[in-house]
Image 1 (cartoon, rainbow, N blue to C red):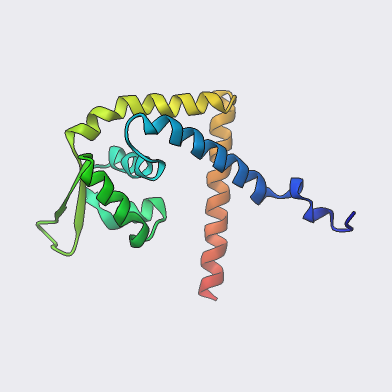
Image 2 (image 1 turned 45 degrees about the vertical axis):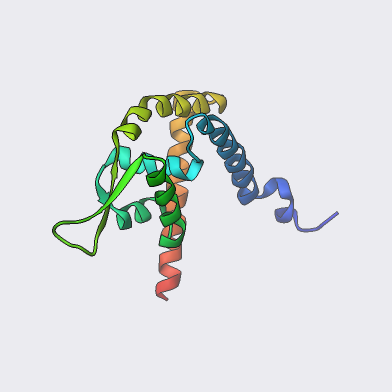
Length: 152
């Protein structure tokens, strides 16, 4: 036995988040495979369903991904016919990503996938959104702390 109760696995927020994230991602992966998309591709599509025709850099910022991670995801979406990439007419340095009709037609089915996953959590709508808010607050808090540390 240890004198360090804070080092018990069941007391680790990081491990609880890790377990929940793995399980929910696996659930999404299984349900999304029917539509030929992966979980990372789903995240990119979510960003584009919110705001279509945006710069790759904006997608990177929204998903907190670097270019080396995002580029292959977008390339696979493009090869599957879900998105197109074009250079901005006003600034050729910007590469814009746009949904195709195929991706727009997929949106209602993927909305059902999200509902299935939400149901699997066994949380009420209130609990679901409270947890979502708390996790977003946690992420913001950790980002703020990280930004202050890197500025020091």
